[in-house]
Length: 414
Ligand SMILES: [Zn+2]
Image (cartoon, rainbow, N blue to C red):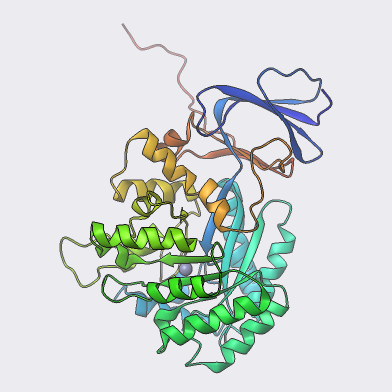
């Protein structure tokens, strides 16, 4: 068989048998056990392979600024205001440098696609956008980056931002994002973001309902706008932490509406756990949307990193597998079949949310392949399995040899 190289002895997600993969011209040419070829071979040793992990919601522009901010209250309001102060001093080089560190870590953790929000407003100017646009091109051989021009601090209260978002979309931003909870007129904010999305023919993504009161919600407006504008499949929302306070009946009704409207939901467990429930001094609520329960009604649900080393989340190693494990842990999910569905939230489900449905792990699809040190997707989530090696479009992009234990040659006495 004429191929460029073969990866032997891999396990696909949702499969118990191992198989072999052949790559030719950057595409997957064959997936079957034992095919014959004289191309170079990589033995995966029976480990899990997938088409790469996908971050659906991360902020590269404001990562790594924790040293410039202070955290006293640890609330969302403080995180927004501390970051706004720091943002005014961002330079293009500064953003590029911090964002590239995060991007490189995400590649080393097996991520092959990523949607980043980039704040465009009078404080950030276009400096962050210019930096991330350059970064996107510079790392295109290893990771596919999607840029969401984002209004973090409101629209109706800051008219200049709307025109700036428009300029960002003209200059190549892939979609537009809003944050109604920081706007004094959240409904109008939502309408304007949809207007921009429609005008440029791009998806919209909202930071939504980032609190714990189930009776106060912008979700009905998002659902109504999605249906009226026939935007099904092009709307996603992140956080929605108040769903963690909803009753089973409310969740069922919302799950059915969200599935019907084709609205994807992303939970950001690291940030949500850090910021929610600050007024409690005991029995602190977890405050993370129970997205696995929404998934049961057919909602596209994903998990993502959100923030790294800033006032929203003062830690992080950009490991999506860690986010999957964290979610499983706090959602009290442990059965292998359920853990496998959590893995889908950082792979298959995430692929539905971002981009235009680039195929993965099929013959004829781009050869984006990542091997993890686990035998199954459930094990990978349970053990936070590290990525071992990966390819993007058939080109090897990283290699992380496993640690080696150096044991004494002396045998213990019987
Ligand atoms: Zn976010």
